[in-house]
Image (cartoon, rainbow, N blue to C red; front, side, top):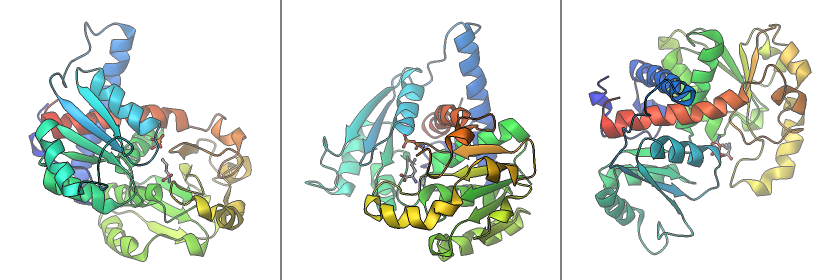
Length: 322
Ligand code: CP
Ligand code: NVA
């Protein structure tokens, strides 16, 4: 499959991608998952080695289990060489400017992944490195997560267009923000249910509302839990994101009433509604153990899908073909 229009492109936020492009990446993710299943069953003679001779720098200012492991295993199993670099190890923004680090890494690596605090850091890496840069989470966005979320929704309900996800919890956080953008682009109805003080950034809403309208989807923000009625998926994330640890007490007090539990899943009024969570989860806070470990939970498929979606994104941007 030719993916030439993707070659060399960074993924900083889904705002930079058109719906048909996101659709191509979703379809490729499904193909990659099937290939992976076939290889595991031993029906594929050999796993393809599409990243042979390629390298990726994985820069981490914040901790990670899924994102790091998805990038490392997806790239490594196809012959690529991932190099993990935490800010304990390199000079990024300490003794060396981000621009200079970007210039140097761009001379040695085929691509860069960045996880950290500021969105401006990943933007600067993309501007100065000359290679594709993937945003593996910042305070503002978590785009690779959102692609896996939509893939997981589609595994249960088919085409995501016209379906509805309710995000319940901290409506300002990176995961909610990326979901809002990808849903608006793809025509997925998206409802943020949160206390008014944790409502999404009005500037991002102002960008996404016309996109959602153009795609025929509703984008709503409400404090009212009754809005879960009819939703295909309830989604939540931790109440305290990385870097906000000092706000813990305040957040728990604000969000206590917003736990996703069996009673809330029932209020969807659908026997087939599913539960999604980017993980890691704090069971007993944003979600009850009964829900995340129960039959409606797709959180573990969603975690696996991080690997397939990230492989698809890398194939498109690094190789320009699959
Ligand atoms: N969902 C997610 O990004 O998980 P990690 O923080 O473990 O990478
Ligand atoms: N909102 C969470 C997501 C973790 C994957 C955080 O930023 O910590």
